[in-house]
Length: 223
Image (cartoon, rainbow, N blue to C red; front, side, top):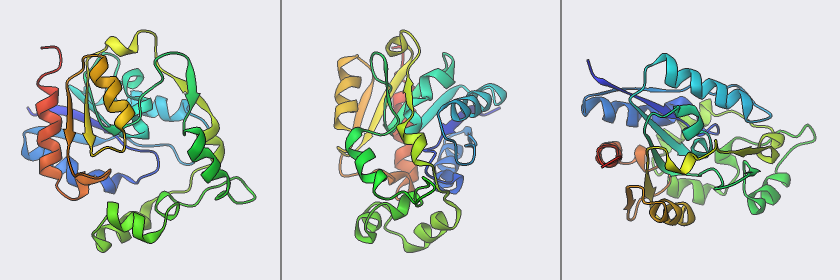
């Protein structure tokens, strides 16, 4: 039987954005599945519940968390090893909003009168998105499935479980976007690797290289 990995996706991206990584993990002998995300959650509770259910029901041996899903990963994993992939982390202590203050200001200017945001790929200029998702066909497919999120979701607050920093975890940075999180992972003594020259959605560009880096890190957790 293949080992089981559960991918916790950014709530901003559709499951199809992770299909290349699922396939790559499969080629490495891992059965992988993408956890479902509740539609338009206004707070973290339904997302955390869905992620926990996916980890439990699939009997995960590894949790792989991307982007904003990193805020949930250690709580959803329940002791299963976690590899963060260019992901946000819980605050070391207390709670924090699900988007940084600077980003919240940007999002407030994008919300409509009902408090709904455009889909994530419409938050930025086409040139910026094109740099992260260079294949226009892949970008079109993501845009066909991506959902709108409430601004209230990003204003809600979430912390990590007590003692979360000592759980079995590793960090894969795709370039330097999450430099602060990478530095924290190193300071905490987690296995850490920076994929130089990669961008936030590099698993769409070279999924086999990202999968190999994830599994290399997973193999060093606890050593």
